[in-house]
Each structure stands twice: as C-alpha cells, then as structure tokens.
Length: 212
Image (cartoon, rainbow, N blue to C red; front, side, top):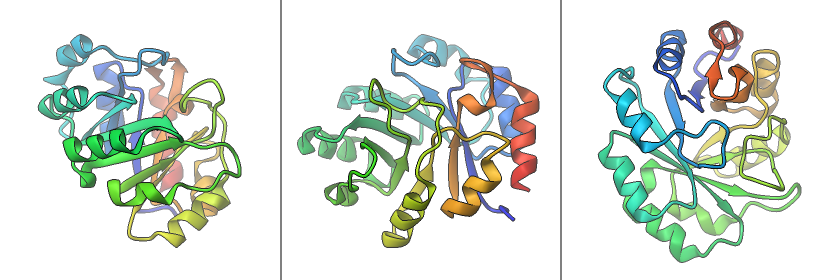
C-alpha cells in the first residue's frame, strides 16, 4: 500500500549501517552534525567514512549552522541540507541558508509547539519541509510520534512543496503513519537502532518490508 514512499535513514555513524540501509532501499542517508545529539558524527569521522558510502543522496543535518558549515557540507558531497531551528530564528539567517544551499536542496525543520501554526513565511526559502515531533529541550530525536493528521493537512494545503514526516517512526507503526499522514517521504532514526548511533539490520529490513 505504501509503494513509492521515499525513506531517509538518519543518524548514520557506521559504514556498515549505510550499506545495509541502501541495500534495503533507502533513498537518502542522513548524518547528524549537531554535537548535542547522541547520534552526532564529527566532520573527521564523516571524512573517514565518505569513500565507502553507497552512491545515494547524503543529507547533512544540523541545528542553526553557519553558512560556512553549509558550504563545507556542499563541498563534502552532501546534496541535501536539513536544518533545524527555533521558530523565532531571524529570517535573515534562514535566507542565508537558502542562498548557500539553494532552496531546492534545503530541508527546513522549524521547531513548533503542538497547535502552533506553520510559519508560512518560510515557504519561499526551501523546497522541502520536515515535520518533526516537538521536543521542549532540543531539536528532533524525541522518539515520539507527532500529529499525522496535521501533516496531511499541511501537505494538502501546500502541495507544491515536499513534506517529510519524522518523529517516532519504526517498523511497527510505519504503515499506519503513512496511511494516516499521506506522507510520500519519511525520516526514520531511533526506531531502527539497537543503541544510539548503531542501526539494527533486522529492523531496517523489516521497515522496508512493511512499506512493501
């Protein structure tokens, strides 16, 4: 029922996990450079892995990066740039990200409290928006599911944009999440792990089997 759904496997820290994810059908591999994340990877560690990574799009994931950091990511082989930020972050900074990464490559992930409307001022700045579960003390990585019906409403309201569903997705709920949200792209991280930063090959394969 979910044939055609694209999957980003995020929080990659090991080459073997990247290989398994790509072999199972992942469309994107995500690498987190936010140092407060338990799945963070350093630029040095990424450079050591880069040559052996599968030939699928790589996603740079960071919280409020500098334009220089985005430039490094672009020069290091990343083709997509997922940026998390507080809802009140200066619009000038967001415009700088859009200019450096290119709006078509930028995935914006604003942190929003439950019930807070989506900031439409962001729409011209990126082609893709990631909707994650709100986490008061951080950015993403909550391991909890979000409002799948709200996601559907956003995607229906702004169909010209790409919408990515994130937050608490795993092999046991992925089919229901896609059915209820209508998501065409999903971002899966902790739900595929045996421990933070270490993916479980069996869970990866089961998730793709559930997507059919």
